[in-house]
Picture (cartoon, rainbow, N blue to C red):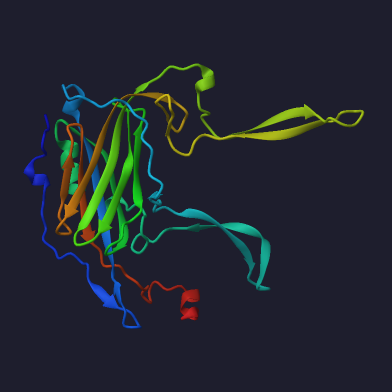
Length: 307
């Protein structure tokens, strides 16, 4: 039996949907780009864990091809040529430069908690008996009428909690007469799995030196070669329905449950509530005023010189 969320979580704010069109320099009508902030809260109905709800057969779910991973708002490392400022020559060597995404202008960057617009709803769920917040995520996106955004990957894995789980799936937004949000999420219940050592994933990235003898020469000198052993970038699920954590801990999928729903958004800023007997989602698209150009206070000296 489905357990609906209290009505106080569903707040509706009226707004006009921005699907206007403009003319370009040649007088040809073109579609206007509209920016939004997407906010998502995924939660678990804990009463379903011991209920009589029928869970579907465990299956291996594949992500679609047109997907995008949200970038971290923290600084990322970028290799760039080392500049010789005295001789204005470019060194052949490269240096690592720390670059941070601009969370006010860049699309598909994970926004920090203080920028999220569903804080209140998520906090209510955190305090509510019988519910558990699995994932909170916010990002900026742009879309033109008649187009569809790439599918944003939603992923969360907890292997050390009392109720270990993996949440994985995608969120896609499209624009036509109305906005549409398509959510395809899978909740997987996990349990520790005892395996032989040769099934274990390596816990850390390391380089192992291996000695071997050369095939030519009388003295057969000893040479060394390095073999790289690297852990997977993300927890992965294999055909044996095992998930490996970041430290290589094997977890068995005991049950899984999908949320696959499409929602027409007649008014932006309207809070959408999607649910199943096991997991639910609160989703919101809010029009965002995108700062196209940097203000003079933000311009760096090299930017001003180029203007």
